[in-house]
Image 1 (cartoon, rainbow, N blue to C red):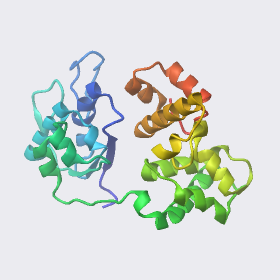
Image 2 (image 1 turned 180 degrees about the horizontal axis):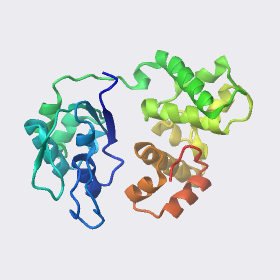
Image 3 (image 1 turned 90 degrees about the vertical axis):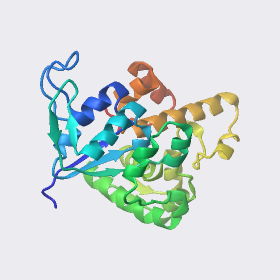
Image 4 (image 1 turned 180 degrees about the vertical axis):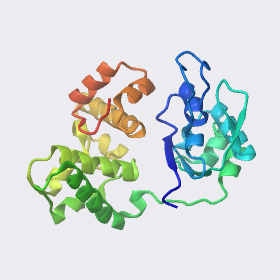
Length: 272
């Protein structure tokens, strides 16, 4: 029901050392900096739903503890001894092939079996191109409303490059393009050329496919295009949080800012 809590957590956006505390909570004094009791996402979702996004990125050690929680219906906070009974519905999502990850030894087979009670396969955008225009149109209207922009108008031609693009980041990437256009485009009609300019940071072709990248010359432009794709991918995974992305890439935040500026990666939606 609408009154039930719905808690979402992106397993790839939280550093491994903090993920267990984020999920299960911790007691005061459990580790340096733990100055008080922290109720984790499981406790926050009690009586409702916990959405575990990007569960394929969860470390094996945390997977083992998650499996125990799913089987026992209770958690123990980090640094605690008393267990807490919970009633939580679990929804998990991933863009990874978890069976392949099981074969590679990076995902537990018993956890996968436990999570597979009901499985819904959502085809990638490239397999349902007829939906792209409608989805993007709704996102564009929402972004314009949130930004108070009444000076932008989608032309019919704007959908052509959107439908043709590869969309390795699927709906999240599509939403980011809508946000970049609304945040940075000049007033007036949004045409196919407008869309193309926001699909391809650092000169990469709109499709961002390996074949199209290999056509980029000279070598410096190719290197920049690949680096831009790499940074954009991890920014997406970390919900455009610059600090989290910098930690994940093991680089200084100041260096990440310099790279986004040099590669012309829009920063309108990036968070500190």
